[in-house]
Length: 184
Image 1 (cartoon, rainbow, N blue to C red):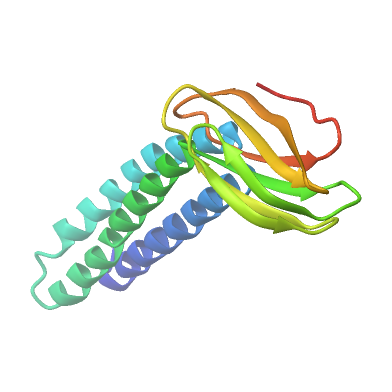
Image 2 (cartoon, helix red, strand yellow):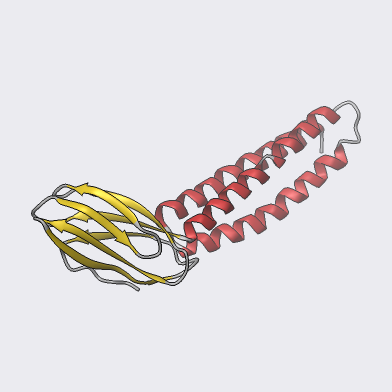
């Protein structure tokens, strides 16, 4: 294979690995789907082998002193995907230990002094009628997540999650003031 075709193969491999990896990570971020996590792990293994193969071919062809700089530059481009993959994996681990809960005020009044209590304690000053806010609650071990708030000066409490533990993080919606299905 000539040098220009090898360089094109390396660049296309690097770009497609980056784009598909970013797509898979984005889908996982927005859905918290366990299936996307499995697809991501499989993708890293499969594409890692393909990249190693292409990288080996490029390095072998780099013996050509005339095109060595271009071939090694393409190898460097391919290697840039490694820190990106590590960053995505690191962020996925953070997401696995975080409940991302969108709270929506479904009551007929504004809510104040909203405390999310459980693994980690979080606080919202106010939620107006119909307003939604997302809170990231770190999971520090086995725990439950509850919410308490003031509605017309009266303290109320609701159960958000009956049980969460490490690596159980996900994205969920919770409607304050109406019955919610407690999934765990």
